Amino acid sequence: MTTRGFNLAYTQHDHALRENDRYARAKYHLTLRWLRSAIREGALLYNIGVGSGYFNHLAVRAGLNVVGCEPDPAACAAARASGPRAGCELVEAGLAQFARGRAPADFIVMHDVLEHIEDDAAAVQDLRSLAKSGTRIVLSVPASPRLFGQHELELGHFRRYTKKTLRAVLGHSFRFRRLQYFGMASIPIVLYFSVIKRASYPRAAAADNLLSKTYGAVCTLESYLPEPLGTALIAELEPLG
View 1: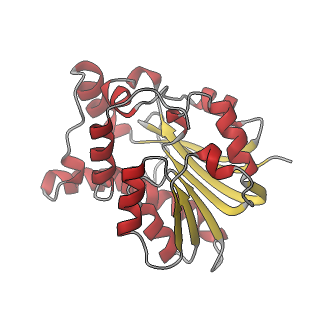
View 2: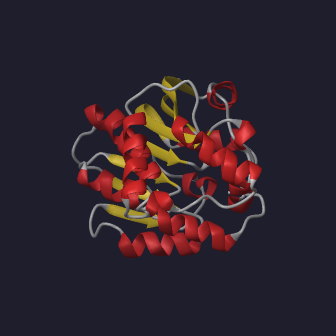
């Protein structure tokens, strides 16, 4: 996985907070709602870029066997330490290495990974090699190039996507079942802190106070609503051919 230079301490801090980040949790629960009708006990799910590993718990509870990969050694070690005791295997690897020679899965989840990879077209081919006829994939990426700011620089992102650019890179290999924006209420936060102030995001999303709980409720509500804009794009895909 080739990434732009990034702030390692910031990245590790971001991973550590993700488990209690209400914005991320809303996306993860949306992912499972999209997949739930197709889930069968014991089906195999690949979690590409596990980060803190929180989604692994949700997937195992839903009856899936999870194999995940994460190229950041510290994040991978933390996810192993806090992960489910059964039904979950973690591999310290990026997408390209993980995909090499691996059998396809029933489900694939890839939250906020594609923007880290310089050659996203090649990454899509690696992703396609992990899918078979009937595989269901949910993928999320940061949205709206105008919101590219300090957060992206710190995390080593190469880009934010529009619906058009995401369809262009994925459309040769996958059919879109769904594609929607998420996080419209977070746009002012991203714009002010990351773009205008060139500062890190506030960590209220991971706190346990009234402001954080209110923000979490807004994120949860947004996960049920089609929005015209957002800080993220979430796609449900199936392989072509």
